Length: 257
Image 1 (tube, one colour):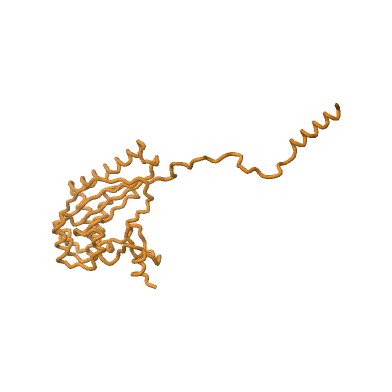
Image 2 (cartoon, rainbow, N blue to C red):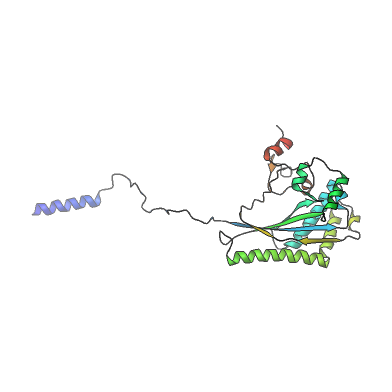
C-alpha cells in the first residue's frame, strides 16, 4: 500500500514538473480570423471647380506674363476660398480654353490661335480648389465627416461669390498683379473681374498625394528626376513643352543619359 502511494506521488510530481520536450505547434492565443476592415487613415478629398475672367486680354500675353497673371489669380483664390486652411490648394485646370491635356498635345501655339481659343471659351482661367481632411470613419459617412464636407464646400462657395460681388477679389488681385515683377502695373487700370463656382466633387479614400497624372522636371528642388505631385510651377502649366504623360518621357526629355 505504501509502495502504491509513493509510486502515485512520484508519477504526479514528474508530470507536474517536467518541461515540454518540444514547442507547441500553435500559439497560445489565436490571431483574429479576419483582418481589420478599416484602414488607419482615410482621406476625403473635396474638389471645387471655378472660373475667372477679366476685361484684360489675358490670352495675348507672353508665356511668362500668363504664368504671372495666373499665379496672381490662384493666390487670390486661395486667400478667399479657404483663408484658415493650410491644406487648401488652388490650381489651374484650363487657360484660354486649353486644358492641360490639350497643352501637352500641342507642340506650339500662336497668338491668333490663343485668341480663337479664348473666343470659343467664355472663361480665361478655369481652376479647382482642392481641400482634404482625415475622415472619422472609413466610409467618410459619419455625421462629423458629412458636416465637415458641407462646411468646406459652403465656405469656398460663399467666400468666392461674396468676394466677387463685393469687389474684394478684384482689389486683392490688383495688388498681386502690381507686386508681380513680370506684369505691367497698367493691367490694373479699369480692371474688372468676374467668376463663378461650380458644384463640388468628393473622393473617399484618396492617398492625399495630389497626383495629377502629368510629370514635370523638378528643377526647383534639384532632385534630378520628374515628379507627379501637382506642384509644377505656374509657367509650366501654361506652356506646351514642360509636361509629360509618363515618367520615362519626362526623364528622357529633361534628364537624358
